[in-house]
Amino acid sequence: MIATRTIALTCVAMIAFAANSILCRMALGAELIDAASFTTIRASSGALMLCAIILLRHGSPVPDRASWMTAAMLFAYMIFFSFAYTSLTTGTGALILFGMVQLTMFVAGLRSGERFSPIAWSGLALAVCGLVYLVSPGLTAPDPAGAVLMALSGMAWGFYSLLGRGMGDALKTAARSFTGAVPMTAAVSLLFLAQADASAPGVALAVLSGAITSALGYVIWFAALPGLSATGAATVQLVVPALAAIGGILLLSEPLTLRLVLASIATLGGVAIVLMQRDKGRARS
Image (cartoon, rainbow, N blue to C red; front, top):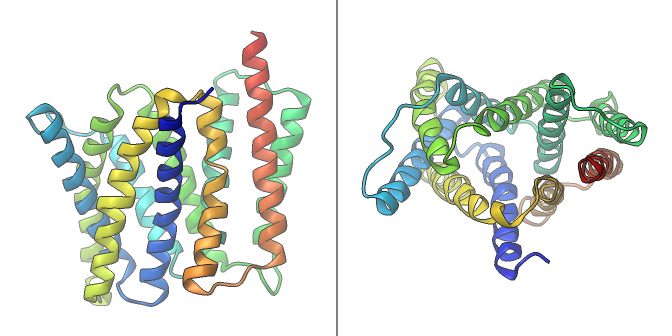
């Protein structure tokens, strides 16, 4: 049985992950700040918070530089995430992001030789169909450019997660990756300097996203992970798009469309089927 502490930490972490989408959409949807500036402030405040936590824990800052690839993948996730949310609603963006993260990791598993059962393949097909339906043309279809950007963000986060598996201390890896991503986000801000427009509320939302819901959210998640199985950790993240959609409806007055509901059922249900089948396969092996 999962300990109460693990359940509490997991719940807080999932709320933090969903809040990233809400805060980003809140800032960019209302044009309180431009996407490039939001990303740079988010990355910088996240890096500072993570390095401060490590300094307090170990008495020294992060000793090594980030892997170029992990920093690049984190940068790609954050920059595409921000620009996508200039046009997507909170729930739609979170569903595309989450769906692509899981699909990216499933494909990586297949390439490494992992075998899927027929039922798992059916779940994977259902998840893909859900995402295709979500972005297919229609009156309630999301902005195509925003959908593509969020799909790229999800792929980048999936690759970042895969790269981070073999890098030891997850907290230090995150801190190194954030610090390595800061110069990249700053370069994008320079490219979009003419469009830069950051109000005090927009900056505050970016800092909150970077230092609290990203940095502290990851710390809480890392603390919860030892009490969860690999499949349990993946499955519990199914609630993130739902939480983000609820937050968008309650806080931003975003509409709940039938397309989003049906796509969510198909995508998240399909992913859940794959995860359960993988768990059964590992239990038998």
